[in-house]
Length: 542
Length: 88
Image 1 (cartoon, rainbow over the protein chains, first blue to last red):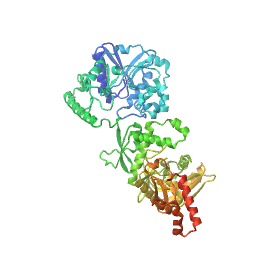
Image 2 (cartoon, each protein chain N blue to C red; image 1 turned 45 degrees about the horizontal axis):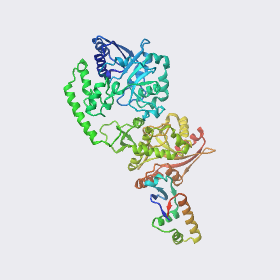
Image 3 (cartoon, rainbow over the protein chains, first blue to last red; image 1 turned 135 degrees about the vertical axis):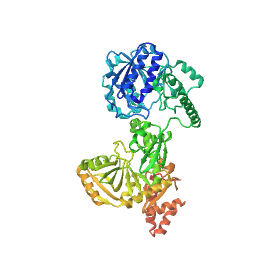
Image 4 (cartoon, rainbow over the protein chains, first blue to last red; image 1 turned 30 degrees about the horizontal axis):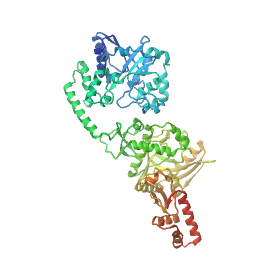
């Protein structure tokens, strides 16, 4: 197992449940970075008290894997199990991994000693063969992969030592680290997908949200056969808000432990009943309405407070730097993403690529399309708040922003990188691809999370000083131009609404923009001299 | 011939463009800039004028020769037809 102080109490319950139902000798290996001396002592006591258990601690430095993505209810400790091969003594030939939110309800000795048929690990899968899982494409796994849940894993350690290079995970994380959705579970799937023996999930990794899909009669049958129960999901049975069935099984093992002496289990049961009632009502109301669980978060973009409700964690991850943390913030804009939005984005993308590109669709996933849909919907809503979305690269120098507009592939990114080389720290990239521009008395450029493949953006607001149409040229040459000359390019770079009234408004905003900022046409080569010239001319003007 | 639904003339300052809105925006994401004459003709078309009436209207409005008016109307129709803006 792998856990820290925050999961110490539930882990005690897991260990206790194993010992209660398995009279054989059991050694618990615990990978941790922060457990107090008292907690370690208690773990040892608990195992020793059974008369057939003991605990070995394997410490990892704090902050290990700290830079890898996690979901709100999955903590970094989950990655520790990737260190098993390095940390466990050579004498260990087989190991059963259990998450600290699982309990063992029956004897699992036969399971532990089973013939693994030459596979490196035994796990349970919720995916049917050929069923889609969002991690597949993200991790470039083949479509016939059966994605397994990593809560329960039976490892052949000896075979792993023989067949897997010890730094296989490090190599993998270096490439795919930031693409992970389900943390170490994605990594394990990517490494082991061809060497898994699948076990019956109803027996060995029955998740409580799966149990919810069955009728009460069916559930009784399930319980008879279930040997390992998994309280997956974000709400756990030790929380008062736990709304699912079978919370009492956790209580059964918890209530005899001194760690839970202060918990009033009768009271907890009542709370669970209330939570379940509310949950069932909610489910009834939403029946058929939504297919997936949805998440929402609040960001502040272009000075507006926006609540975004979405499916894929990627949408949230992208927006982290813009989170609005004030609990009482008034919401200006509600953006709710739907499956239709994702489909629509897909079609738009297909329309925009050439036939050859369309065929391989460049490995974009539903998560990518949803991120793009979030941008589109926020842009659409911001029109009513006097904000334009412009396709271009916006940088800020000495608190004055410059916006470079050009067709994709002309060299906007190259050019702003030249500014960075020339002026160093003074240059802040507000948004490398799609900045928001507020047009009222002043014209202000805002950073936003959606910024093209180079991923350059800064959460800031800067007064726009100039707009520069960028073109490739034989020589470096810049001149100031009239708004009317810049107008067509500007109109083809601006986000357009399909709504007639909003489109009128966008036109008016572009007109106002024309009155308030200076326009330039820059013909340039990809060299430092071009940036120097542009900076001198545009910087001097304002 | 008349203008398909969804094509709209929009102005800001002296700038005049035709863009597509609503469903039409799915098939047309460009824009067409119109000059003063083009704008005049567009508005007549919107009101239901026929191609044959346009040259005459131009002559009346701007005092140009019928030949140059016909040439203007032809050029205007060329632009609209190439961009698929008109229908029977």
